[in-house]
Image 1: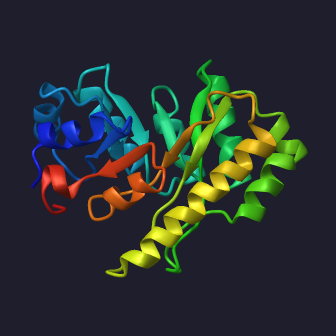
Image 2: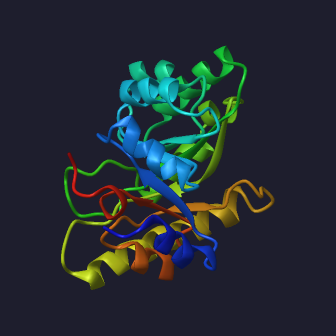
Length: 219
């Protein structure tokens, strides 16, 4: 495992945020990292996230990073700091509805599919443009689109991984120029995990999601 402090030192000069992926990890392990200074944690199940929210300090920024079903949004809408895995207009509409109920604007990232694996979720660039051009999107006043998220193919072919990250960065630049040129909130490119975060940072990532390097293999 990489020590937390060495990882923070590595990311500090690059202005890259660290999302500590705490899914499946117990509260005491999260608290240990919190005590070292970490404040952003990522979970992939809404009910597990809500349970941990109740048991840990309230200044933690919780990110939802896994595929989110519409009927689970209500569990995290009151407090979640960012939902990174928005992959449909219908999901955005549900998040907006729950944001309105809780009198808050919920920051989100649009998940783009850059990997070749069929199991990966996400939108194409055309899908994203269609979404942002739609009348339905323009009435959503309780969400804030802050950037894009993507997951590279799980492969040892680092050239392929780099190409996929380049694809996400290019898509971000395109969407920024067309739809968010004057919006300073649209600034995040969430890409890079424990095995490929170095390449992701080289290709423009602003936010890396790291679990096993900090917590060990999945439990």
